[in-house]
Image (cartoon, rainbow, N blue to C red; front, side):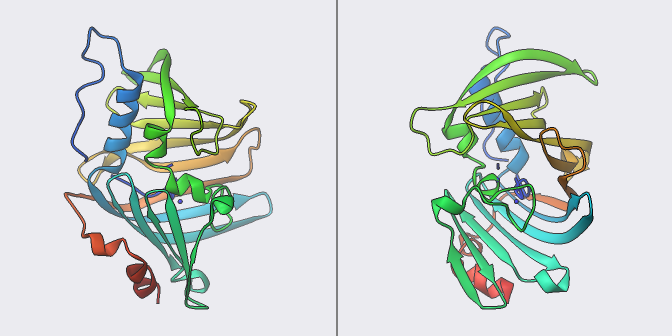
Length: 256
């Protein structure tokens, strides 16, 4: 949904041509290559998905069902299909640009940069989270901080800081990447390097023909009872999707 890239979109996904194995050169991992491998694995060449988003707060909880399409690391389209009062609301992302569609007024709105940090549909994912899928590759410099072990796998902890003048929201990110390219966790820090929120993946199982975390949770730092959870009900990785799917016309037509 920032669905990051997502996070729906933190939310929402899928195989670009695989780059050379980042762990092959003398056993020393290349942090930038590790990150690119993980994003390529996460999104793939193209995908379709059905995801249940649950926004949990101490005194209320809201659930939405979302259908999503992605192509490469730059194009995404997703719609709310339930509940009825939100059905048809859609979001289109192309590169760094995003548009939303509201079926009640039959209107498409292009989001200005000032709105990219706002929450998507009241969730803990921002518009920027949904739009940034390739930003973590292009706009950040990466360093392997540590290498740990978990469930028989190496886990690379990577510190990502913005390049000079990069158009990003976060002052730093920290990624936890398993040696089979699965993203386990992503920490988001503000300009003062204070932790703001964390996204974690869990329930890793075969989805769409490969291992994939079925549950993603975005949670604010030091807040235990506020989070947004994405649960993949369906996920299919595809070799391609037509460009005409990721257009403003498609956004309007599918939302009506």
